Image (cartoon, rainbow, N blue to C red; front, side, top):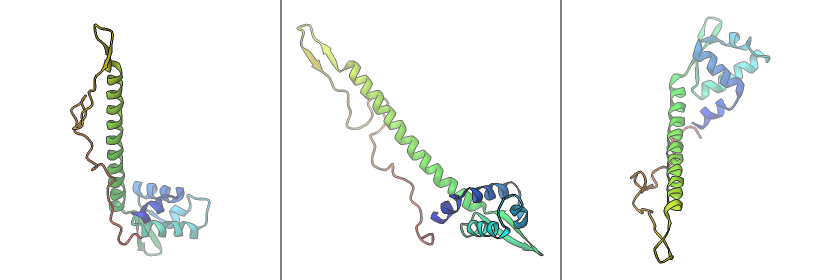
Amino acid sequence: MDRLFGALADRTRRDIVVRVLREEATVSGLARGYAMSFAAVQKHVAVLERAGLVTKERRGREVVVRPGIEAVRSAAALLLGYESLWRGRLDRFERLLQEEDQEAAGATTTSTTGTTSTTSTTSTTGDATTGAPAPTGTDRAPTEHRGEDR
């Protein structure tokens, strides 16, 4: 995964991936679209190939570049996992803020004798306003295989 995101860190390589996702292209055809040498584009394609983002196939004198769909799907799945994680954290944060607002609005009440008392609506087993369970510590980032990528 490190190699994949390292390859995508470069703007030219991201553009090459987008172009071959739309339609397979030859390396020379890709090179015509950039203000750099053919050799430089070949190097970019080689980095993408090592990351699994593209595959190359020789057809006569030309080298055709195709997308590596599985690597793209893998990256998308990882990013969706992180998105889900952070959306969950933001939702919990929003609920906590709402709970605080509700507690602040109803926390102090004055009795008939003029004294002030405070009531607490905080639950140790979950969110008192929504009934959602308390965080369990299982909201960690998705794990990834750290074998051959390092």
